[in-house]
Length: 276
Length: 317
Image (cartoon, rainbow over all chains, first blue to last red; front, top):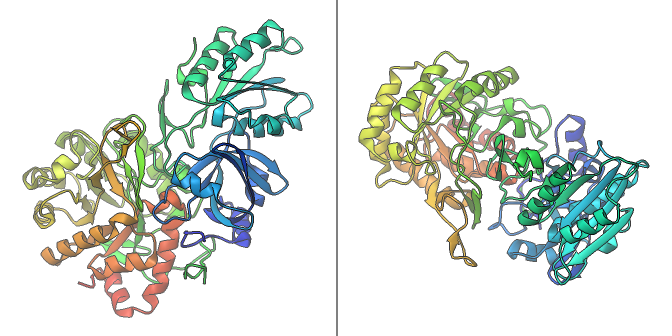
């Protein structure tokens, strides 16, 4: 049972949109929860509004049913299918443990889509560099770019062990390469691509879109910067509201402290001062 | 009725308020405002018509831009949260040309929250706001997350009296003093503020608290301690409002702390508040402020004696 004291119903969400408002927290139906690997789950819910408006690197807030746990859990959109929206998450605490135990037909409160998306209007080859639980938004990035004929996408994913997201991203990316800690990391893969002449396309430089652990993203940004490849990094920080009002999820940038939720989550390497 | 017993309200429809309140001579469209620190126009305007709130209390403004504390700044706590933002804001000059005129253009009643590290900081901001279109000023002497000013002033009746007395000479605008609950005797502090020239009191700011990550043994937020807010502090806040009202029968009071429903707002009004503000609830439900206002508007229909007192600038107690 949702814990919100008021959740707009589908017709009220439609009315909010019509009136020019962004629909507030509302209740949706879960259609599937699947275990992908140990501690990692994929949850799908039905939401026409989010399905229609979500852009790559945008995220949704999911709310616990437990009135003791009020703050939302933010997750990047990992796939959209019609009016179905999927997220992939790891169980890291009691809130995510609760989500992993939900099943088709259960309801959950959501808010979204939130955040500024990747800029995907500048290049003809996007290299999607993801690590661990940073890969889900890159799956959606590949899906979103698939409809764009002139654009090539290469997924470059690093995992701790199980390559749990390859099956999803390979539906959409033109090429998928992945690696786990037994062999190396995403930089290993990027070096291989460079050696094989697979970075540029039609003589045009690629753009790197990245999401993953902070040390990985810093390494990726510096690797890209050394080669004059622009990079956009999707950041993570402990969030409160997720929509820009509470100002807790800050990251230090060359322009001062910025909110990850609404100034980001996407920042360029230059903004973060991460050039090599 | 919804599953949890509340009547669904469409917060997006046009609405005529039935019950207003008056705080220190300023009319509010309804008795529910937004609490400072939880409202940013650029974020909240997408979710509801902000001009429909009783008042908008904006994020604390300082004489120059403040960058606040480094992250992480928040940790969840049972039925609440611990935050230590450190009053990050773009400064009063930016506020005067950006958020304030935009809010006034929309038709909002604006309470400008004033922050400082020193008496001189507060004075600079109040002086700059004296001729601004802000409807009321709220002096933040209760932020627990800045190293100077904030709570260090609001927990010392002598320092508070000196500051408010000084600010009183700089402005004729209604001046609210926002009080900290982190004190031994709230009545002493409230009386010091009132006698030094405060027109109204708002309470409570957050309670000092912390969370520790048991994997590292270290505090989760970078400031180590933060301010606790959310439904967990509701009965504590209500108790503070009650005590201040018992000590000071006449001063207008804005009740703040864990309000997420019309019923909880009503409890504050029965404790003697003229108005309330919704804070943390907006962080987990963006439309909570307007929803609480609508719920309260309906609840006051069947309480004409209370509604009449509020409309006349009086209180239940």
